[in-house]
Image 1 (tube, rainbow, N blue to C red):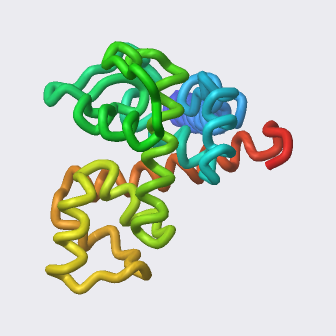
Image 2 (cartoon, rainbow, N blue to C red):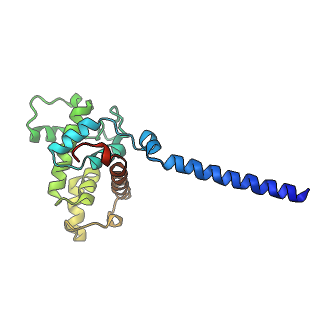
Image 3 (spheres, rainbow, N blue to C red):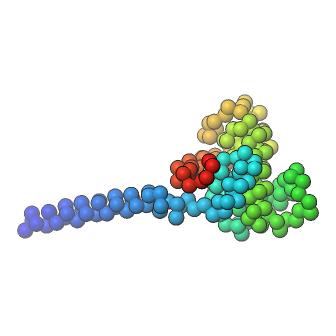
Amino acid sequence: MRRKKKSRRWFYWALFVCLVFAAWQIWRSDAVQMRFVYLWPYQEEIIEYSKKNNLDPFLVAAVIKNESGFRIDAKSKPGAVGLMQIMPQTGEWIAGEMGMQNFQMVKLAEAETNIRMGCWYLSELEYEFGHNRVLMLAAYNAGRGNTRNWMEEFNWDTDFGNIEAIPYIDTREYVRKVLYDRGQYYKLYKNRIDNY
């Protein structure tokens, strides 16, 4: 009787392990990841404005995922708006630099305008920080002024790549997550985008 109970326990334990393993494999599958974790709404707009600004569209998708979770109505406590979480003051500056006539703040809540302006700004930061993604993302998150100050204080140059050295914990985590998510978007979508 004891042997039967023991063998049943082992059977149920083995079955449980197999089910957990199968569930994990299904969860990690590309189809499930694309449907539940790495969604990519506004793909056309992201690709269009990434190309126009010589940006990596997978990086832009990762920025939006981390900034707003692709929620067009996202608004932060400090007042950042839309998919790419653009601050109104930054939005006004971007609009002026881009030569956008009669720009109004409500436009930041529109998906296409927000992506267009956010891509332009990311491209500007990429150029300013010598095409260094870590510095570019740190500047997008913590501000270009803070990032410049860190470069001066800690003697960073455009070869900087030590995410752990970023003094703000939130910015450090942000940069790490965006770069990780960029890799996931690339892995999942690289063969689904024409001309990339």
